[in-house]
Length: 487
Image (cartoon, rainbow, N blue to C red; front, top):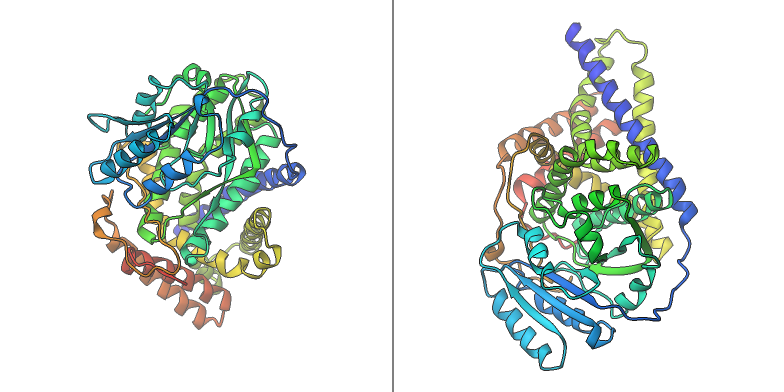
């Protein structure tokens, strides 16, 4: 009985923690909806010098598309320089050299910058290039982005005063409709760039530069201490260090920056692992400094939850594991608590609020509202399935981040595939596995089957569906991690 009571209290605490997190997200939603109006378009009257940094590591499938799009950006040639930061170890370097030579012949100031090693990974490359930058402002694009030709003309004017250190634009997705995996990711990212970014910026909370599709004031980077490579999310780290020193960020919801989403479960997992572990590393590094900073209480509270974002995987994972057990114990009258139903109601309320948050966040970004409404539920279902499938992996990553385990920066492979192309990605871009936990994930898959049977036994469709999500998520992760689903 004591064990059952402890399990119930543990489950109840998890629900309360998640409810607190959701309540803060609801506050951000309020501010986001209040701020959801088009920015007054500013006209660029002077043209400050801009450096565009393109950090590249083994991106032979997308690097030519990136360089071509950046070289088409409208801006006075004499005020624009492009640095291709090439740490590649494959034929990407030759492709870059040819593209750089071609555009140099057209009078574009573009440089091919290579290091003798990958010290510091992306952060190291950005920091190395900074010593050669002549621009007052530094725009950064990852390899999978395709910036609009008006990007600088639309974004530079928002550096309206000397205290603005960053202008961030909203990601959009050039391959969103490629498969259910990309549509699921779009749901997540759209909510981040609508509710979270808009909510934070309009409530005077800290936001983060998203690593790409934004512009830094060079003096802001230098004043905040430059790029550091001691976390896997150098962008989040520098963003907090800059804002804690008083720099202001601007977010342009209406300026879109298209990019390619990962197309396999393995690629998605690798990206999310890096973001989750890096955020946990930033907690270790910046949380105490945040609370010692002169920021107001709301900025500190929202900033803390921002840093702890990836820890939600820990809460959700253990809720997924414990909820069916609590359900079974209550059905068998093995828990002597009258308030089980109260917590169950709270759990249902949390699920409903999370669904509502993603629904509104997604609709705020899509151009066709009726399609957004019509296809939201299947895409959200796919998002839940993928999130469950990688949850154990994310928990390990977050815990490694908190305990200070160092790991290398593992790139997310991109392939420039279109929906009508049927070739599979080649194994030459297979990436390192941090931890092989397939056996544990298979056990969780079997646990999902047990939950389906449990729901069938009690004729409960909700519990059956609960188990199906777990089975599907871990089945994809265990058996089809590299498979390209095209539906």
